[in-house]
Length: 226
Image 1 (cartoon, rainbow, N blue to C red):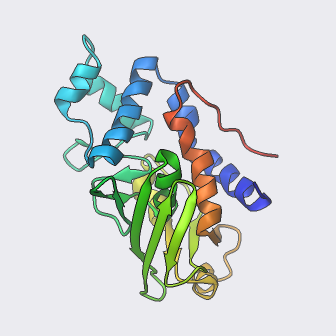
Image 2 (image 1 turned 90 degrees about the vertical axis):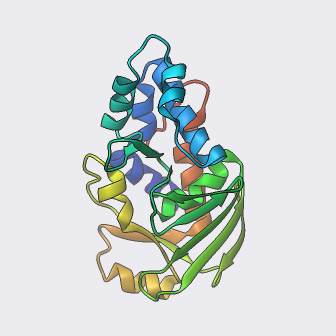
Image 3 (image 1 turned 180 degrees about the vertical axis):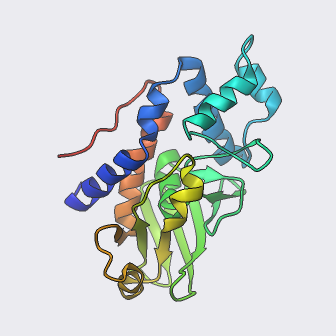
């Protein structure tokens, strides 16, 4: 742990308290949310209507999806169907993620580097720096960053802003990969109050601490670090 990871974790918790929201769910809905997460990463798709109904015998599947969506734990597509659950989605974003033989997408660059430690999986990430146009490629295995292209100095930029009702639409586009510190400083443009950046290894650690509780057997509170 470091002051940087604690700082980033604190800001994330204050803006998007996903573990705290999940902890408010009934045990059945909490398991359903976890099933969404596992299906996306293990099978490359969200749960089907039949699978949702089977997981909640005697309960209204539509109401269950609405509850998860209203807490911004799952994201719906334009037709109102489940498309993703932070950190991943089946909707295209700038951050392609290959995992378990499937191609899906991460909601943002931070989410992309959280998938491997969250699921203890091998993950390949492809994205692009919006400042320089360079392609970014990251290979991870669990908590370990195996390789980074075009160089080890690739940064994750974080624009801290109001996530609104759906963070995937309002907050996540402001979290991106940046080719190096030079590109990161250019992107920051002196806006140090709400534009930060950190290394991939640092943000992978933050991602593990932020997202792993979502898969825990019992609710885990992710608290801000003083």
